[in-house]
Amino acid sequence: MIIITYCLLIILTILYSQRIKIFISDIVKHKKNKHGLLPLPFFISRKQLTFKISFSESSKYAVADQIAGNKIFGITTSLLNKHHKNSVRFIWRYYLGEFQIGVRFYINGEANNKYFSKVNMNEDYVLRMECIGNKVICSLNDEKTEILFNTISKYKWFLFPYFGGSSKPNKNIEYKLKYIN
Image (cartoon, rainbow, N blue to C red; front, side, top):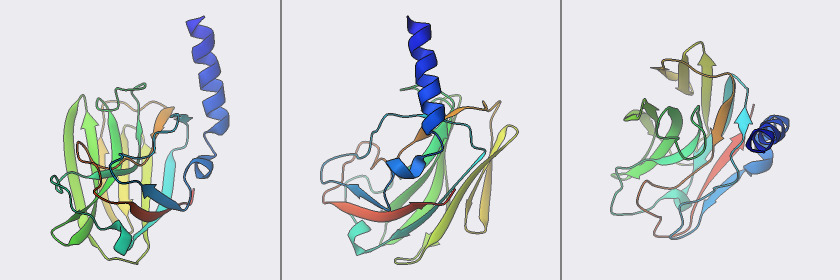
């Protein structure tokens, strides 16, 4: 029974894996005191994901742990709640009066962050995540960073936006996030 259920889950998620824009509207909204979107994760087989993002006045926040990054989107090769084993996500934060975008990744459970340059409010930025062999290339416009994994499965779980680590927003937060391909 478990095998049949697992196979059905794989089939359904593959069918819907190309429909990311159904799950993410053009505006991401994190409600006050809530971490955010947690729809049913699904497999994706795409080698590349591209989104456009921009922040506004309503994206600013103040929480005790402003250093932590808020998750934008990402992928994991680990099933269900083990996304802290092998995964990579774009992250953002409003820190010391400026917006920053970076990448948070876990390799065999070890966490690392890499931040790109600061980003300006009300400007569009292109986020691209591309899997080539056993590496993931993450880019913010023309700035790139490469993350080398031991192995990357053809099928990965898509990770949705999530506010904070342990902190929750002290007000409603919004930013634009548009799926491109």
